[in-house]
Amino acid sequence: MIDRRTFSKAVGLGTGAAAVSLSGPGTDAFASTGSDRPADGSRVPTVAAVTPGTHTSFSELKQVKAGVLNVGYAEAGPAHGPVVVLLHGWPYDIHSYVDVAPLLAGLGYRVIVPYLRGHGSTSFLSHRTPRTAEQSAIALDVIALMDALKIDKAVLAGFDWGSRTADVIAALWPERVKSLVSTSGYLITDRKAQLAPAAPAVEHTWWYQWYFATPRGKAAMEAEDSRLALCRHVWTLVSPNWDFDDATYDRTAEAFKNPDYAAIVLFNYRWRIGLVDTDHRYARHEKLLAAQPSIGVPTVTLDAALDPFTAPGDGSAYRNHFTGPYAHRTIQNIGHNLPQEAPTAFAQAVVDADHL
Image 1 (tube, rainbow, N blue to C red):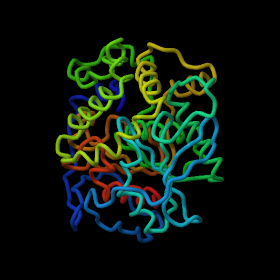
Image 2 (image 1 turned 30 degrees about the vertical axis):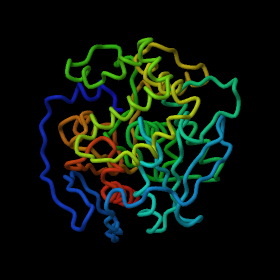
Image 3 (image 1 turned 180 degrees about the vertical axis):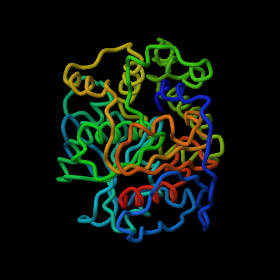
Image 4 (image 1 turned 120 degrees about the vertical axis):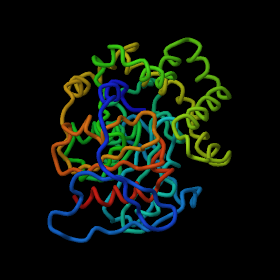
């Protein structure tokens, strides 16, 4: 989920842009600010509309050794097409992109959708590797995956943990990023800022973070049945208009049965609020990220209007972090799991970012 401090600072800002509708079934209204037309005046491809939930699985799942992991990932599209890496969040998995991937593959992109550490079929190569989950550790996992697949540069797109991961890569390794789609804007965590109390309503929204800081929350995450029930409950809270069925949740929940899942999730949320220390291997990167570095690659930011973590203000709270070509959109009537709830709008943002 997004950084509670970023949200807290944005409370009280107004909204400005009016919503416009995309035509065709299965699309969603969005508000747009900034310039998202190619500088050379070329035509940006229009993504075909798809009804959310049209696809339920990926045609191809693969494994590759990359860094400290054996990464499981879905792949779609031509092997030599321009690469898009789609990064999921918590509590979700690669199925957040089950409708987005074929849309982009149909336009000629090579689409890579990895399970993040602790999820699905992604496993650690050694039992000795600490099960940590600093923001830079997850980012370096993606860099290692790109190296293993011989991908020099890619469009990165994500939400939640995926947005944060893509933001970190764009900030620290911009040469690896052709363009960026970041849902909820700039999510690089400033742990020092996280130590200060936020507004009461913001703290309330982060209930599970405080739950995970307790022995009781730890026990809930470590027991499979209560873990799956908790994650499903989060879905209902953060996507109030998403009428998902049991089969949709169950497909994703399989990824939560990874033996390292609880350790990774608990570390990530405890680390953000300073309850556990940064592993020494990532300390240098985290020091750089604590300075809140700007992002200069071409970027489209997305806000989901019904996401309780979306700060008001049409992206104004984080706009100054993005210094390159930029556009912002607010997706109306959509909750936190934006790519699965609004696949056409998300895929179009990827294409538009690629043409900024």
